[in-house]
Image 1 (tube, each protein chain N blue to C red):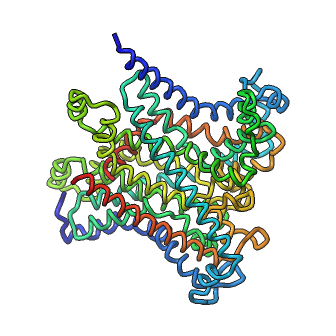
Image 2: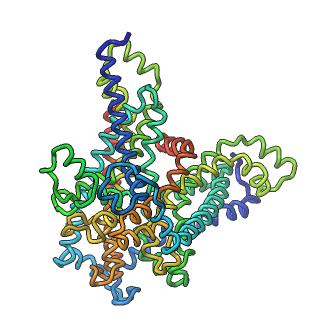
Image 3: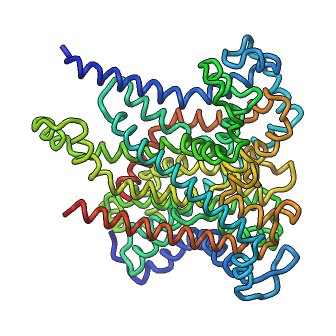
Length: 277
Length: 307
């Protein structure tokens, strides 16, 4: 038998949790359910779920507003920049975590310092550089910036993963005459796959959601990414509310799905960082 | 770890170089170069005339510049204080609750991080729609609860707009604090908690004497991350109150000031690229000094705790 005070504490705890869960879920439910309502229904029935699921908003976004293009742009930019960032970060992390030389600690600190540097403050120069390189208003401008942005976190994560790999395997391979890059490719990479996945997945979110750089660096509609399209179209659809909510749902649903599928990577990766930091 | 030898030098260079060069050229150098541009002025996109510290003198002596600068700065401090309060203090207590053993605590921990994965822009827009005076759900709920007389145009009133914007950002990143604090609480040795409970410690004693001291370093990290994020925050203002920080610049933050001054046309509040770079440099100084102060403060607190 629980004591009455204990039972009351339990009830309070569950009460707080239900309230907290609702504050998280409700705004998202409102967003999704409104996107399936007709405009009349939004005013007449603001709280309830849609009477019938109306996909008009989504069809018109893809047919009229070229949303497929924006999705492809976002996917292309994200995939290329993450692939490059994780690859170069893995190479660097290997060199500084497995070889003892004069500057390995200093180089690690140099990379990780980037976690605390707001790259946004260099945007004036980035914009002028992209103009000079003649890639202003192209997706390449975004790709380069996003690679740079993802390197500090990737090195931070991969350094630990690679350091944990026991040295015996590499030593044995070395005795068998395997070259140093060969050791990286044949021994380290297969063993550090979970680390590569973690770095890619954790960097995916800020990369996919990034709005500032496309706002400054992208002008042509055909180069819009999803966040930029969200920012620009939101105002234009002022009177068509279901379209507005559909725009927001399209921007969020991919990350929500990825998070729900892979949440362990986030929770583990980030909490490790908190404790270590 | 292998002691590197001469024969490894070329290969080490090859491995470190790509990451090093991209990171340096597109992250570190732009910040330094922007500082350089703050010493130049010019009418075109590229500031060409060297003017020394003129931009800084203008920024702090000409009313049209310094009024906007100090306004954004003081808004930003209020914004930071509200967000820190919600994320640190409420977030800490929420982490204490979430780490209790109860049915569904794993699920709650997962769920709490969900808003952090959304884009700030989307979160800002959702809040703006929910708070809309004509069709927003929030006012309708207040009316249904009989609180209709308290309704104000939340984002249209300078008294409430900044508070609402701060709450929206806190809603989004609350889960990050909860996650960080929860992982700190997970790290506490169960036997210490057990011993305290046998000694008759109640939850308050537990929180003050065991949990708080052991998560204090994390409070420092969370506060510093919030500080850097808040003093460069832009998306939330853009989404909720526009790039001018309406109404009447009452929600203008350093990030939106920087965007406007550096990248908008003169009619839309642009001050030219040189002045924009000056604002960015001031932001860099504010962030660096602020982080320094916070680090010193939390280090001292840590030492006091250890005594």
